[in-house]
View 1 (cartoon, one colour):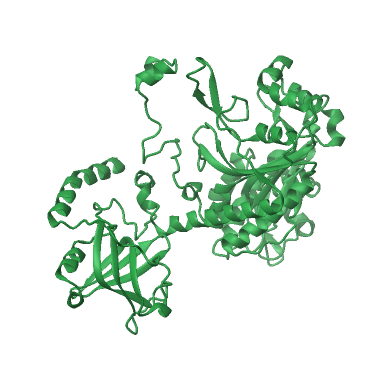
View 2 (tube, helix red, strand yellow):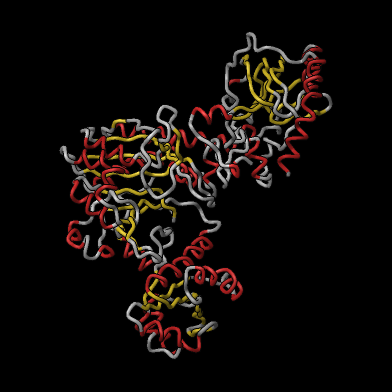
Length: 624
């Protein structure tokens, strides 16, 4: 209702504002006004220069009849001054009409600001422009929110409804510029490494890739549909078969997923593929362009090569396939120690073949009160399937709090296994191995976040590789691809493909930064026989293989080279580099969590005549 009321209020004032502007005869054409400088450009060295500036009114102040206009464009801000004694009456009258977000042009000369009135926070803060002529190029209605103030408390729905206003803010202008710099640097780096930028189709054949396809009905082929690509996966593999050797594009990907926090139905990827490579070749290419991109985009030097961590090791040490390694904080397996203690949950876990007791040492955890542990940390473990989170502290050489009385006989052994010292908190989870790993990993993630609060931002990259190729659906028992079905199994695991799918690992890898997965890739299957075996494991019949993927399988029959690649999320990377918490802030025109665009009211109904042309008839319940 807040958005609707604001929109109605703005609309109600629109006619009045237009009439007011017309009465004043204030709006003028651009005419011969051509800007000489952007609004972030002028410095003290420009004093005395005649200039023409164009932009939006960011703020305006009236001090004793003197108008101070803070003029803004995407490059920055410059202060313009209208002094009654130095301008014609018509110019002064126009200045009296100004309000935030009017579009104006001024002519004048650059002058130094009076001593003591400089603004060191603005690059242009040493100067101002003495206005001689002012034109109002367009007026602006009263604003639904202040662009100049850019208040984060403004309702997101309201900001998305007026996205064209929010995009004027310095915050979002800087994010768009950061995105441009990063993508430009990636393009230049890949070009220098011999990659070709090649576009793949946006109207493709529907194929299963994990999420629902957005489908597009074909007017020329009634009853048939295109899909919008979830990724260019199959086409970039075809490009390798076609001999293109090194391909990339900044690819648009579209997925019709159920509403989830911080997901977008359309997003961008740095998508690349290479022939005659193994995973280390892909790693080196990615590390090269990431180092260049971060230096060019944000001035940050990152060390290469990035650390490599096998999936099984990541789960064992950190309880996550995307651990935040800005703080190491590995988990310790203390099953052997805990099994000899008189604490029933520990003894029960230690007595089962797959049971584990895992411990996380939290250094200097004075902030972790009993309330924080019970109310904020423990629920993370229970939501992941554990029965609870046990804890104690090392205090003055002894264990204190939580389950200290049960652990006292093993104090020295626990300190030795975890490296714990005085003042440290020890957190425990006892459960089946994978449940224990994931549950304590969730707790670890929150603890790392708290320990890093207020500290300088760092950029820590690492690779997670050697993922399982399959995962088993707990309800149906069927095997499904852990990532996707076009990934080459490790050579040593090929013989177990049919006999023990759960034990098969793949040449599959993720790039992780600060606990966020930036993207996934793999060395691909390039042989028809292996690809058909993988498809058979997940339950596809030969007829289904041919129907859905016959064009790819057929291409493999004509000399497909070994190849591999990766796709990295542009939006997530920009979110991290800009220090934001939502990818919506990194996309010029994002959708809401329900995949709607409030600015242009998409999705929308189409005329019945268009539906008839597409041979589509809506069900009665879909006409609301």
